Image (cartoon, one colour):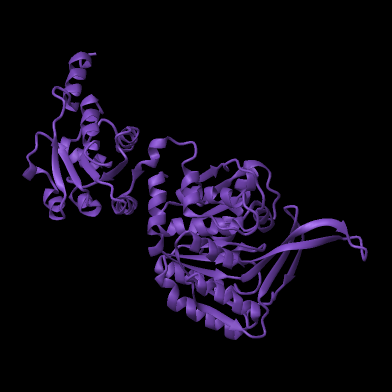
Length: 490
């Protein structure tokens, strides 16, 4: 999973639709000081300093998706009370579609109040309904799901056992997902995972997995045994077990297993971390990530979430920054076209002159470097369009490239004279030039202006073409021939 692919996911997030189905609630936080004992009873007195009201339960999943830039709709049932109205207003203010939320007058909207002093929870007060939906509400919700769920790229099921996800509702979700090919990601609860039969993947934590499998998990063998039992129980293709400070473990029905270690961070509060995992995993699958890469991305997000107090969201910027920790700085410069287009547009708005050149740059040599340095001197930043491996093979033959595209990209990105590297798979960079609209298009001196691909595009909006001479006697072909002469008979 490359940084550039993570950036592209978040750049496309607004075009990805996620439907969240589950139990909605409000999380209330009362922050204060506990410095004295009550004279009325042997309990602490908390002097409340501030109050905070947040979306909880499935609402926290929604909140995470909104923070990630996703287009979100929610389907559920709330009470016909003040808390229910407050939930709906909060969703609407965030741009969330609530057409799938029904208000049921007899029902009480869940509200959990946490009293916190000295960064520790002292007590939690729950006010909620836990009984299953009425027949009328259940039928209404199922009808909504059947009509609207196929329009989304992922369905996220957040079960807190508060009565919304009845067996009939869950069956309807799975049926719609299967029929339309939409992945269904479930954060499960309870001891019977058979009710989630048909889901794409479940995301229990270790304690939940122990309860559902009926086994005490000890070591990786015990973890694997429990995972296989749960996959059999729910007829799952995959299962992701979150293991707190030990990271996550992804299991596949075909026997595949991947353990993802956690990133070392100070843990303040695990509240809502499962919601963050569900949101990021779902968005990644909606964006076309593999299960392995989606799980790795969710692991990064979870590590950030637990370093915050309370049910907090994680931003794309935090995830992108964390994904680059410990990696080469050159990875920061390698971008996908969709992300780069936005960056370049902002640079041009600032009045910076953008220079673009392209090539295969197989076996980087001094001639390449001098050429690129000269190109960079013509403007304020240099974008290098790099031919992909497939493109190089078509242009240079089946024996090329000698260095694969990832290595070539990182080597070039390590040069100070290059600001961004972007791969393209076509034979020419014409489409890339049309997208980026550089001010200056640079090519080698062995070209004529008319022979430079994209010159008409650049000149049409006032840009120009510059031809830069290569250093004589320096070429990849020459290096290959020298190697063959010296070592070909060895």
